[in-house]
Each structure stands twice: as structure tokens, then as C-alpha cells.
Length: 368
Ligand code: NAD
Image (cartoon, rainbow, N blue to C red; front, side):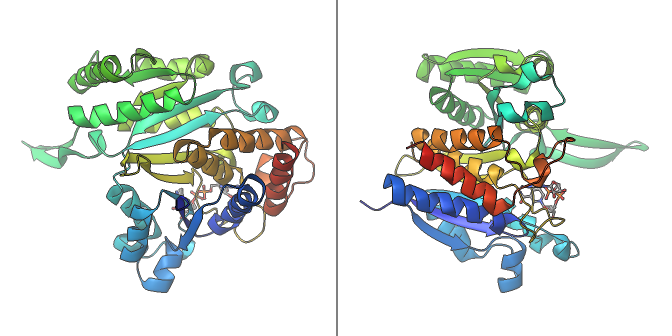
């Protein structure tokens, strides 16, 4: 049987630097665990524009559609700021998300014990936190029609429309329930059913999908504003949170920042299952191309490495190997290893991108 395939799109700025550390882990899995992937690489973002005059070629798009998972580094940089909107590096990423129809955006908020003091919340509120926000990504108020700024009488009105079909709600609910089964088996659905009809439908459909297909998963409902309060009061009460595009935009940023640095935050975007049963999937760190530190070996590779761990767990059913990576990250942080972005006020000597990757691999080795 053919090996599962991964397409790497390292992109711009620190993207290739952090992806280099992921490639080390992929090689380690092959050498030490007998887990092999068919790796492909292509261009996205500014580097693709430089080579081909477009941020994503049709050929690269086709390869992404065929891959079992896509790993993306980051795109963009000041060099491309003046480009026309249609060929900006970010358009490459948007095209991938749209054409792969990645409707479920997964943002974990995981707090490693060694970094609990980085949070703006108290240590005991965040230490050991491990929650997952599933945000609907391709519908809702950012896409609904009518939209625009119109003139009514002698004043302007701005209009956006929150619109969800049953099918759109059901498919993202299924993503959340599937994830919960691989985690703590609990889902909290958030909307504003008290004031929005789209919220009433959201709540009904999530409940129906649950009762029909996932009765083994514990389901609760919460108004999204109360959810924001609960996330800052006692975030550890949650396992998986599923919510719409707008509320998810806010709640996932809130939850991510409970845990500290941008260099630590992974993400995944999932679509419908392919013929082989795996969901279409794009894994990427939350951070951008960090032009201010690019090329200096200062970037923290952990967000990208944890994104790859998500790929192992959610695309390849290799949850044990994903946990091994996460435990290795935990171990090196506990040992005091820090890239520059993780240096606290007490100071110390930061390690390079490559040294952080090597230390994580050494910890994985030690776990065998
Ligand atoms: P950014 O995330 O690139 O950087 C913000 C700050 O965080 C910078 O000071 C940077 O040095 C630091 N930082 C980010 N990732 C880090 C890491 N792994 N290790 C250490 N420090 C890290 O955001 P920005 O500066 O607003 O944007 C820079 C470029 O990236 C822009 O062109 C923007 O459009 C693009 N961008 C791309 C994506 C993406 O590819 N998904 C996301 C956000 C921004």
C-alpha cells in the first residue's frame, strides 16, 4: 500500500526555517518508528509569486487537493506589500482554504506547565489547560448576502447577514464530535440562541446531529458571551468548543492567548472526508512570516511542530506519535530551553530554531 502523502508548502520568511524542524521529525519517524510519508514540496505566497507571478499555481493547487494532508509554514512579507490584492501572498492561502472547502478551523489552546507564567491569567487557571476551539470557517456573517454599505433616505447603512444552512451547521458539528471522541469526549456548542434565529437553528441542528450520530459524546450549549466569560474564569471546564465563524474568530483568539506566545500556537483546517476517509486538511502555525526575525535562526519552531502533531492525530490516526511530540515539547520547556520569543524577564540565553528542533528530537529519542 502506498504511504500516506504530505504536501509541504513552507512559504516565506520564517516559514522554511520552522518547516526544516518538522522535516527532521518526519525523518526521525521514518528512521526510528518505521512511519514513512510520501513527501512533496511546492511554493506558496511571495516565493511562488517571485517564481511564477502568482501566489499559488494551478499545479500546486492540484497537488494540495490530492495530498492526504498539507503542511503550510507562513506567507507574506514587506517585499510584497505593494502588490495588487489579486496576487498578494495571502491570496495563495485563501485559495487553498476556499478550493479545499476547509470549513472547520481547529485552534487548540494548550498550556505547557513551564510556560504557565507567560499567561495574563493566574498559573492555576491555565496550567495544564488543553482545549480545542472548532470554528466554522466558510459561512456565516462574513459571507452572507445581502452585504454592503447602502443609502437609505439621507443616511448610509452598513449591512452584513448571518446565514447558516442546516448542512453547514451539521458538518462542522460532526467535525467537533469526531474530535471530541479522540480527546475528552465533551463538546460545548456556543451561539446566541437567545437573540438570533441563526443561533436557534444552530442549537437545534447540533443537538439533532448529537442525538442521531454521537449520543456517546457529552454535549452542552452555552451563549457565546457567557462562553467568553467562562473561558477567562475557568477554561479547564471545556474540552471541545464548536461555534460559528464570527464568535469563533473572537473566542479562538481569546483562548489562544490564554497560553502565551504566538510561536507556540498550532492550527488545522479540515474539510469533508476524501474517498480514503481522511478529511481534507491543512495544518499551519497561527503566526505569520515574522519578517523582523526571518533568516536569523531565532524563530520558535514549536507552533509548526505542534501543527504537524495535529496532522498525525487528526489525518493519520497516529495519536500516540502526536502525544510523543507534545511530551517532548513539554520536556524541553521544562528543562528550561527557550527560543528568544519565550524569554521571560529573568533573561537567559535563547537557543536557535535548529537547537530547539534538535532538543525535541532528542527528547523523542529518549522516550523510546
Ligand atoms: P507575525 O505573526 O509574522 O509576527 C508577529 C510578531 O511575532 C513578530 O514580532 C514576530 O517576530 C513574532 N513571531 C511570530 N512567529 C514567531 C515565531 N515562530 N517565533 C518567534 N517569534 C515569532 O505577524 P505580522 O508581523 O503581523 O505579519 C508578518 C507577515 O506575515 C505579514 O506579511 C502578514 O500578512 C503575514 N501573515 C501571514 C500569516 C499566515 O501565513 N498564516 C498569518 C499572519 C500574518
